[in-house]
Length: 559
Image (cartoon, rainbow, N blue to C red; front, side, top):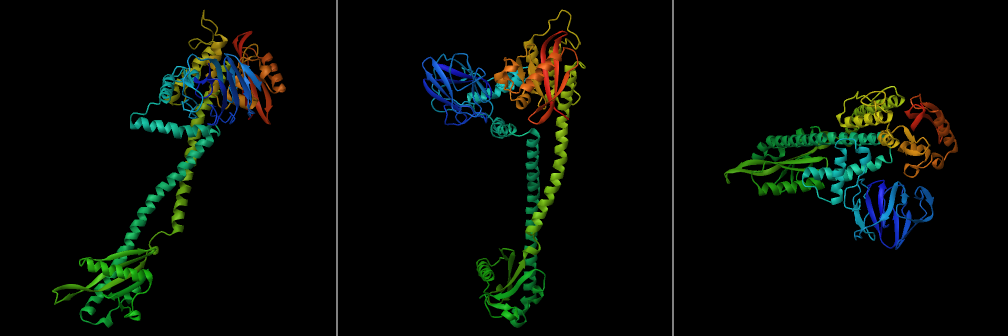
């Protein structure tokens, strides 16, 4: 039985066990081996396992299937062969023991094991150990490797978070951070940050204006009700004497009708007949809202004799009814003989839709102005230390400085500066800050220098970096250089540059620049065009004078 181990790509160290039969490899869940990446086709290739024979066949993938760096259509695999699928590199080895649980990779970036059909799994690293994702880059940073191992171990073991803090952190990283990291693989960092600021701006504008409008609307609505109730009580106070003296003809509501915003004013008896205004005397109210309100108010005052008022809202109209009571000698108490009813237009006091929209727009404009200022300030504040770091690295590589300086205060990246300084010192042959090798010290080997500079190359996002051996074999190139040259680091590593370069003109340029480069001398500088964009190419030699141990070529957009 064989197994495939991920040695490069997401969740490095993940193991796929292979049983006899055909096993499909792709990015969708319908495959036996799932590798979630945009560079992997839905069905990328097929592995045919028959006893001790393993054959891989490309399934018409977009980016091709490679075995040991060579593009193949179909090829028999041997133990130790490396299979490149998209941005994953998997190594075929013999498995010690079979298992029964299928496996796939989790797109979250830590290599979670997720059950699928048909392919037994042995967990991470073949023994259940946490994957070492990023360990090479992080090994020199105190605490970072341990942090990655802790998170990865939790993902592998499936241990549930124990407390609220751990749960919040776990789900935030699983859903929010993974989502943002996936977006960052497609879009530039500045676009991502600008998008988050835009969301923050709109959210802040809405969340700040909405509660204020709600509270203000509630207060204005309460004010409208109080005003309506005040007018209704005035109506009752002025007309109670006439009803007590049986002078119904003198009941008047005209002084209330003249008030701004009043929709209707009535005095009705206990039977619902209108006593005032005179134009509707002895009639019943027929308008739907008014008729229903009179019925509701009459029933309410009958049910509760001590009720002071009844209020109902119909759209923008608010109606208030107040009982008109007179003393009844027979009953020996005040009894309700009529109702004073006032309808008021609340829209005169409440915000209309135009005012509400204008308030949101004004808040959004002000928040946008502030967000733009903060965004560009944060962007420049974040970018400046990286630019300074890049300039310092450039000076050290040219031999004009011995180390990078921590001009800006950011304790979270202090370990990064330590690692870079150590890498640059080792690469340049510095010992203890001296500009020459220590007495009796050994000149660093190519492996030492490459290992030290890989981290520097990967941390340089705006420059391409290519590392070549004295024989012009590819030792490493970062993502920026991969993008502009089309050379894949995973497949080019260890091969001669002329065998992996796609552009003959670029190959000739590299040959010429390397031939002119000497350790300790000034960089060889040329301009070269990739896909219509001009780049400034610089080549440095690292090692003892007359015997270069390493060539470092950088690419930066002209201007």
